[in-house]
Figure 1 (cartoon, rainbow, N blue to C red):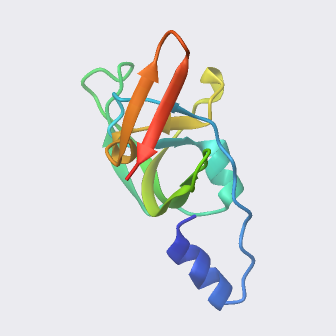
Figure 2 (cartoon, one colour; figure 1 turned 120 degrees about the vertical axis):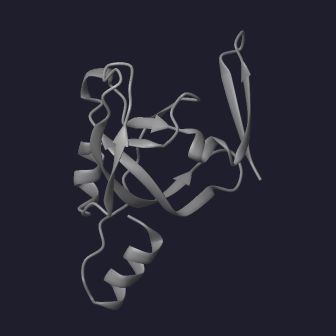
Length: 126
């Protein structure tokens, strides 16, 4: 959930869900970050809107998907990179075995280096 929503719940004396760790696939072809519906359900938040999504499987007919505002923390060896309010698209990734896609909305805020031979990807956030 977004930092704003978390703050509002605390101020209202309501329970705040624990952060939910997720494994996302880096996808330079995804415009937006997408999160699996199971992760969204664990956050116990409601949609903030919807958007039309085109995928290879939808062809020229876009699908309407729910959007949610979440806070994203990307952990690494250094200081965590925090995005206090990130709109994400809810999708179903059950068959892929991932929790979502890390899209260009996040990747545009970093420098990405991929060493294919060493199988290492480095994201440096500024």
